[in-house]
Amino acid sequence: MRKGKIPGLLLLLAAIFLTCGKPKEEPVEPGIVQIMGKADWTENGEDLPFQAHSFALRVDKNVDEGSFSLTLTVRNQYGILLQSLNFADIPFNKGSYVLVKDIITFDGLSNAFFGYREADLILKAYYVVEQDSTNFFSVDSLDAETGKVSGRFSVTMSHFQAPTPAYPDTLYIRDGWYEATVNYR
Image (tube, rainbow, N blue to C red; front, side, top):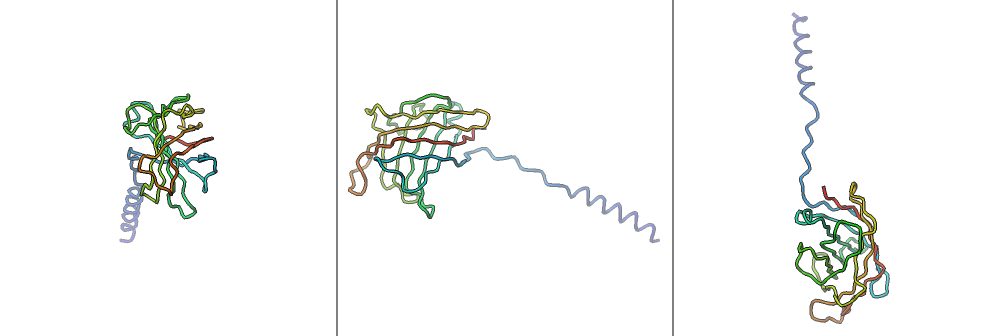
């Protein structure tokens, strides 16, 4: 009687063992993926109070146009967002591009926006001064396989809202550079 139970028990254990495999991995949901990078610039002749970071993203509407968007942020030592500098509709090709004052995204014109912030609240907004011939955004190196992109930028911006004594009327963002990875797959 014992001999009959052991093979049955072994068969049951083997069946359980074979069905206890690894669960299948779920496919990654498509969407916006933020990948950190590095960035720096001077603002009205002064260095940034805290280290700047960048994240590059590629949204669905940009993919067909072959462009990317880049957001550069400055956070304080507690991680609270203080400044954000956004570039949009930058061609995903090596070259230097003129920046325009453009609030409409995904229209194919490279543009920029700057905001002094308190976490998610924009305290002061700035847009590109188009008459300034020093405005540019360049893609100096690009690896289409990995999505790594780096380059330089310079832009003069003017406030969008009514003047406030706490913030400058004009921003001169100079000697800017960035390194990021664009997730475009």
